[in-house]
Image (cartoon, rainbow, N blue to C red):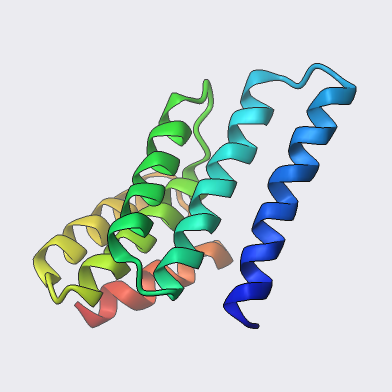
Length: 129
């Protein structure tokens, strides 16, 4: 899939979320979860464009928003930590990459989520550092 198509899809997602919120009063967590997903996706788009500094900021923003939820999404946190690790791998800073991946693995292990299909990318990356 081309990066232009992914970028268009991400912005369409944000637009639909905004328009949907005009029709009804969304729950705070619902709106924030959409924001977490948006920033994580935007980070992925920017990383695909080799804009590593911007991608890292997007991932950090997604991570902070996820933590601010009354019930943070554990698998979303794992995904974001994996994405932050891939930024560090691209920079060849494998110790920082390993720290992000280890944090994500601990979340998976502590919550019995290691068999969750969403755990695959993090577990695969952890095997490479």
